[in-house]
Each structure stands twice: as structure tokens, then as C-alpha cells.
Image (cartoon, rainbow, N blue to C red; front, side, top):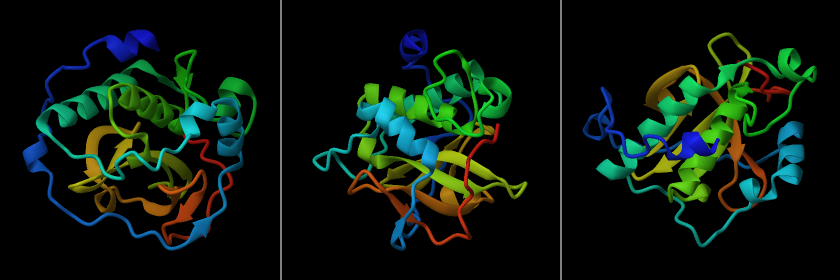
Length: 197
């Protein structure tokens, strides 16, 4: 993990540019939501990863340097972590961690990205784990970056960083920006797990 955090952080963004991102509204929060059980356990085991500092900015100001960091971390984690479901890897339905052994499923990719981006100075409060229903109708986890250009999504299924409403996903819920809790984004019934590669 340390090698990932250091290698190439300042690498220039390729293909996708900051200028190409539209300025758009973010997803609308629609009340409280029940957290994913595996997230609760993750927060017990990795308390610092779930800690919320309301003094941090609620939005990421996208600058060329910040954008380059986001693109670089997203690509490096997507390339470095071997995708495998928790069932196949750990023989459990769903477990959230930082892919310490280089293997993980969707939420592990996103948690590692958030960890690395926070180490690079981005506000954790503006980077929220998010549960969606993907193109296959399955539960999936992505990382939502709440920015001054709208909500952007980091996903292990693609290196493209997309505005939330252009992913094709149904957005169910995400971590709150105001408490160690979850909020509803108004989608359909929440999946029990996010054990999707």
C-alpha cells in the first residue's frame, strides 16, 4: 500500500481533462439510511478511516493539480488491486477493508482510493462511500467525490471519472457528510451487500 501511495502521485492526467468536466449539481440527499453491515465492522476495525471532521471542507476544489492526483490514484488502484469477490477471496459474503493483500472487491478499491487521496491532502469529508445498483442489477460500491464541479464517481470498473448521473447506476445511499452515518439518495431498496468485483 505504501508503494502505491508514493509512486507516481504527481503523474499527469491522461485522456480525461479537468476542463472537460461540466459544472453540475450533486446528488440530492433525501434523509437517513441504514448503513451496510460490513461498513459498521470496517469502522470498528479502521476507526480513523471512518472518522468525520466537520471542520474539513464539504467540497473538493478541483484544480489541475488536484485533478491529476485524483486521476492518478484512481488508475493506480484500479490497476494494482486484483478484483475478487469476498466470497471467493475470504469465504465471507461481504467484508470491507483496504485490500492490504492486493486483492479486493468494489468497496475495497474505493476505500483504498479514499485512503490514498486523504493522505494526499483531499478532505475525507468530501469523499463518501456510496452504494449503487449497477448495470447488472447488483449491489456495487463506488467512491463519490463531492466537488465544486458536482459529484464525481470513482469506480473500479472503469478508469473514467464520471459525473454521478452519467454512470448508468441507480444511487441508493452514501456516507453522511455530517455524521458517522448514512443518508439516502432516493434510489430503490438497498442491497444487503456490495460484494461485486
